[in-house]
Image 1 (cartoon, one colour):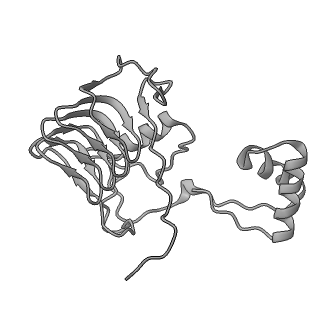
Image 2: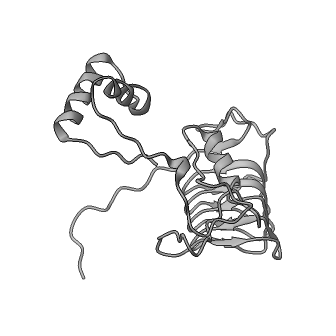
Length: 211
């Protein structure tokens, strides 16, 4: 969310004024000040009517995911056979290269979402989200976890209440709420989720490419 339409001169003046005041938040500082002396219009998202919404869903679903824990809770809102927001709604499709697969109780995967290209090879995955290209090795156990793009969970790893950032290859035997978060770069959210930050993206190769 967050689509704005401005007259260019008004936006430039508003941003210059915000910089002079030391303000940095668009929603808390820039827009409220514009309301005082400009014509500002808003679309009431609560009135939005999405086709195909089921009775168990939340109408006009929206969340402010400005914190890690708010982001995590929004992920959980997508899980289950009666989610608060159904990403598989055929009347309101999500446009992407490959639609995510939503899995309920099926084999060793229960109440979880597997994104495009994600693979779960003989592991137990419960109440979790595997994002694009994530891989969970045989014998691993995941519960209440988010594994981000192209991250890998090693053989036999037990992972509970954790977020594994993009590109990591996790081999540690067990990660739980009690796991020491004082490792380099690791941290813990206020709600107790252990966070392994994403690995930096490799720089693009420079030079000539022979074809």
